[in-house]
Length: 401
Picture 1: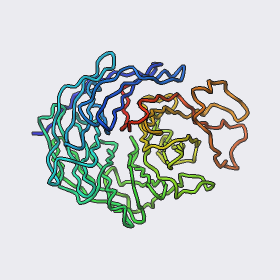
Picture 2 (picture 1 turned 180 degrees about the horizontal axis):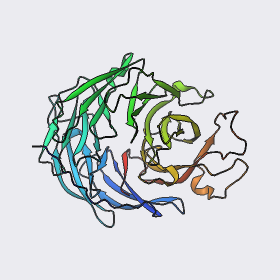
Picture 3 (picture 1 turned 90 degrees about the vertical axis):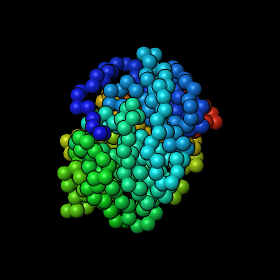
């Protein structure tokens, strides 16, 4: 039986700490790194490095926050690591995901976890065939969905934790995008498909996230560089009585055909949504103000850029202060920490160490004419960046505390 514990597990919190920690792996299997962020001095630095048994493009913590899981797409396995008091990641063994698609080697293997159960969840995709899977933290119990004739490499949880939404990016090569909705019961099977939502005129969808408390989901499109917001009926299927709301991610002064959008994330405060778009020479990060109560997009809060190429991914910090987000692998080999400063007036210049933060270039944002001229202007703020390796591509980052 694939039943889950219903107890509340101990999870350390560092909401008011000045030091926070995150991990990132390399996609060539060289190492797993632990990093420390000092939010007072606005610096981030590597504190531990551990040889990895294989590529780690996707990382996830279990619900207890005591173990970190890394993925190895090429052989369809996960590795469980304990987190030492020094934040060293110690390998405890490897587990296999359920076999599928006539292969044990996948192009992508993305991991997730839920606050409502103790399992590790994920998607495995060859690019044309995919499954959604679940494993118990010890790897002894596994389950999988039916094979999906598509490329599923992004999933999102409903606020209740009872529905898992799987985005099929392969269908987006046509004129619509499909999202499969799995019901997750106390004893799930991944055979209980509530339905499949079809989004008309949404192409090149690359990632999906769900609002943590409201019935909204957000999608970014890769080549059209849009943010698409959709409303659910309850926390299950698309609310057909509402329309999709779209937002352009790039300013009109840029040639959007040179960019692609790869990632988005919602801050722990639920007040900011981040998106990341990249060209061969430049990355652009955009922050949107969200209505904290409804999750609706209010406006573009701020935008900034930096030089360099990389397929970056965003991961929101688990603490509210600063609306901090980690950017892994943009540029290639770097981990960058950014936040949204909404306390800086247009007429005030805050002294800072430009030697550390001068990679970040603010970009103009169209102002609402009705906006009070004395209102604070939002600004994307650097909390530092760390070079992990000049020549090695990084996978996703994960916040430990």
